[in-house]
Figure (spheres, rainbow over the protein chains, first blue to last red):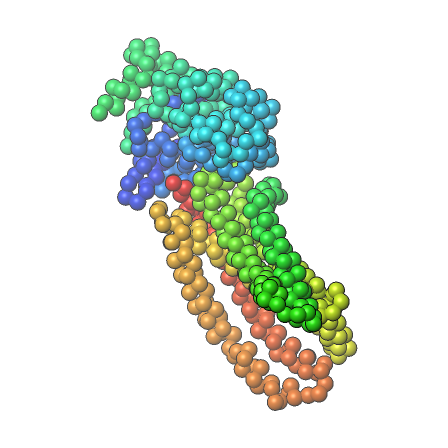
Length: 233
Length: 295
């Protein structure tokens, strides 16, 4: 059995009296594009931040390729937060150089060509870019690494549908067989076509974890339809 | 990786701090020109007209600008260093900083080293400015005023004759204490910002200010206890010396008595400062590594 890329055991995270994640155990394999889906406040972002080491678990543990969050795991994880996190005074080019400086798996040629395709001006400062363009820059940087695990928190929320298609195409094209992509999003219909597997979480607990194909074959449903059934209000 | 972090932090800080130093230098040049003019005008036999007096008032006022600029720039340097730390670690940029493949201690070291480098740079700039002012601005006749330097030269010569090269020791000791003390002050603010950022969800800065004073009180209590165990006080030791052993005409002898009496206190304060500084670092590291919760 191959080693799990992301593994949680009895993982809990509380903010004050509220549990954002409660006793979550799951093991994600290599080589898959996995959707992390759930209603607002279900714990998607919390799970991703725990995997990055931006939050510390209240109980249980989380491991990336066998490592607890730390310098080894951070070298393997490429993380796209749901907010802008690049210093606003830096130019796009300086951001690229920054990534190249710190990540040995960063592919500068890939980054430059992707930014060209998306028509992002390389010499513009981050603060002069629109919100959507900033998100494009961040996604390009994150996807230009040859990482083991890509954690994408709402990667397509702020960009137009045309860029969305390009970005999803890029994710499909760029990830290699031994790495895994975990995408958290509300836009299920848009990402559904590239997902191999999906996991539903609600109230910090795992509701369902299955492959997209088995859902289609067994129940004859799309993830979008299934999501609306499971989380009907 | 530490080198890369330092390089990046330094560039990021310099972008904002470099202009403040240029401003101090410009203010110095302005003040020096103004003061030089003022002095010459005071000694000249020119007819005093209303306009002439006005120019004298303005140029006299210019020298005050330098003092204001130096004070303002010093405050600004400290403010920018801490703001950079806070933004880079506890706000949005923290998402980038804490997902880099570097250790928490490397992040802290980089922030401390770059802050120290900039403190030294701004101190050197102030030193240069004061010298420019004294040298070019205060000459009553001629272009340069070298009187102050000649006096200092004489003093150094006298000290060298009576005491010799060993006078370097107290100077080095004092410099070491200032160096460690600066690191300690910087880390104290860092620690307060970290705890404030972790504990409070909404009023992080306010909480940080509160924790700064809490830490200050804790350090004061610790110092008092340590002093109690040390026994005696430097002031009392000094008092006991005057009129007694120190009442000698021999400069070297007096120096030796004084230096010897101060030594235990120096090493005590140095050790205490090092312990407190290390405590700040270890606590900051602990909170960032184990309690970090970026919202």
